[in-house]
Image (cartoon, rainbow, N blue to C red; front, side, top):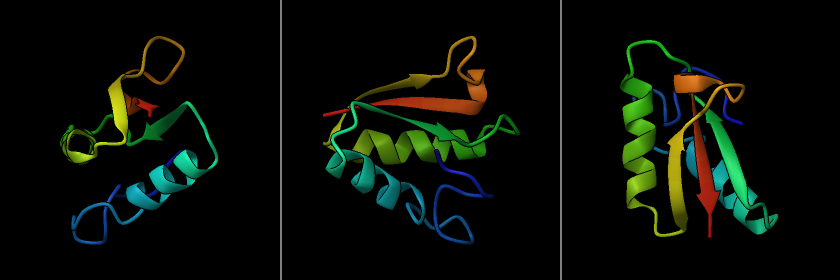
Length: 79
């Protein structure tokens, strides 16, 4: 789970917290990961989606469902 103001570096850079979390989840052999970006305006959700779209290690991703955090969470299926 990612907490904090941004999935990326301060100032909206990219991947600052998200990429190390993905690396750790993959190295640990986890099948999936939940990224908590909050609902807000949707900007962080879009940044997360763009980073995931570009990462070949990601099998798929989707918004959280009922009981998973809804649109404030992205559920990632890992390779």
